[in-house]
Length: 393
Image 1 (tube, one colour):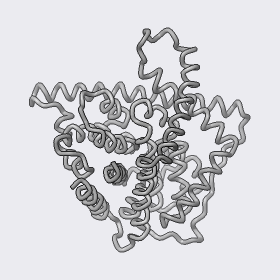
Image 2 (cartoon, helix red, strand yellow):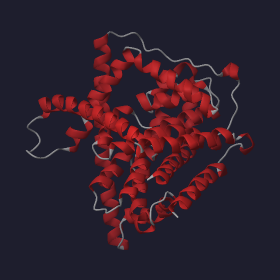
Image 3 (cartoon, rainbow, N blue to C red):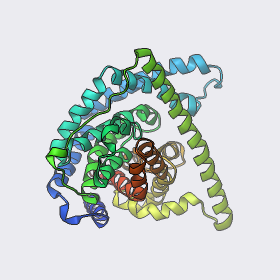
Image 4 (cartoon, rainbow, N blue to C red):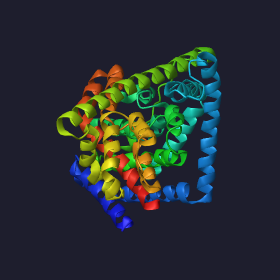
């Protein structure tokens, strides 16, 4: 029965994307089918095989080691602030972002990261039926982040059609930055995070192909990556260290605000209606949780976590999932974990609009106009990834 629900869930997601399509006659179904099959095969590989287990353990070991290195620096500066036996979230989860951001900067400076992004993007373009620019952007969003990626495309940004701009922004919202993957791994199981990264990469193309279909003239499919001004190694190092610290501070500030607001809303709703705000959201999202393969007995609780991610951000929802008083089974934990690994939330609309507008005001205004449609598509990507995993678990 669970397979029937999951297959039905895939069809529902595709239907919801089709209903929002800007040009249904242009939809290319063959690449969509191919990418769904690839998603299923990759999920099988990562979650159900010994080889996949080796890959996951290897990636997790790398991030664990990076977090150990990061904690050396954090302990030197902040050691003594934490009480013995305690692990403050800001120190253990957010500040290590500084070190991982620094590593990304070094890989960028040495031209290793651009080479990887171009290579993987070229391979993806052969599968997804889209252009080199769209494929590169999806990989680059994963590597450098949803706002930073547009800097690398600054030369072409003003020349892009609204259709291509939508796809680029959708990819940026559907993925997450590698700089904060280590932080996620302190809250969720690494195998689900790695699986989500891979699934969202293809899911973004699947949903964008349906919602926003278009044909690219091969002559216009040119990839021009903006080269940063040549900096010395230590100039670059200082810049990426500060950028990582800014991210940690911004995420920390957003967590303080969002968690406080959620607590306030819950308290007010309980006083007035006898039911928390999150529980109300849970009932609204319960049908979505059900088509993702989550049992009805857990659908309301799961729906509240999904809704929390949408109205706040993924960090708040991950903290709720990992620290809340829930009794989900292993399959539900896997589905929810995969769903949470993306930037699909309301605050991301502002981040992406701001990033594009800072580089090209006209294109930034265009992104603002389709902001809600962008969030709709990115949320469908997260739902689709959760459903694919539900077929495997």
